[in-house]
Image (cartoon, rainbow, N blue to C red; front, side, top):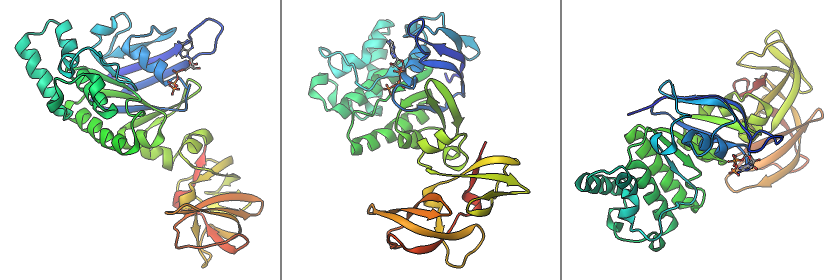
Length: 344
Ligand code: ATP
């Protein structure tokens, strides 16, 4: 049942003369893989998902499942189940009828349909609510029913468009765990649209980061922290330190001095990045350390955010709250070689 999804050079614009909402997007999603389409509002995530589901015909490019184009296949025959931010359940049908709707359309037998609906409701822990109407359920319960309705049709592709974003923080966390469990158990090849970086990291095997309709980076979550592909990708994941320099002979000359990197940089001009939480204080003055002045401190409870100034460079550091520095303090900062990354 598992399927490989390939998106090839997909572009879409809604009207001639307008900018492309999605531009030359290519992605491979392996069978059983969970991919998050991540990016700021308006970057084209929903457009891409609608093309995969068949709600939208692309301007150019192709979508393949197991090596065959599905662009000519009508949405209801793509075996792609979609769940949206708002559940879109039929208000006049019971939970049970809502979940069984897709099966009835496919003329499944009454007994088979009853069994599958009961199974799906049990999976999302809504088996006690079969006779309720959607209006008698909380937002989280409605999304569980929407998930059950998607899963009951045994889709090859599960397409989720910000299904958790209308829920409050606690419920969202619980639902993330549920979505992840159901996806793992069912082995559905999944594309999940979100603008929430944390959600993408928690859920996805790989993240596709889109800006302005273009793919910026497609990799495992860790890579977005360890080895971002661009300044924009680094910034989207909270890396705010950029240090200009010139790489030669295995280290980089910067205004902060010669910095050594564990992972080599190709020779020439480069920009180094390091996450605020990787910056260290080091009075012993080891490798990659330099004098700096604290120019601001913001207490955030579990961390303190500092701005450090050194040789005209402003660095952001996030340190544990037991380190108490104040504005004007002279310190020695260190940028650990293993945490520095040279952007291409
Ligand atoms: P969000 O996170 O806000 O939902 P998104 O990343 O899903 O955003 P899309 O909804 O795919 O973004 O929109 C991408 C671009 O296409 C935007 O500039 C948007 O204004 C435009 N767009 C979306 N739908 C239409 C439409 N039906 N007609 C014309 N333009 C559209």
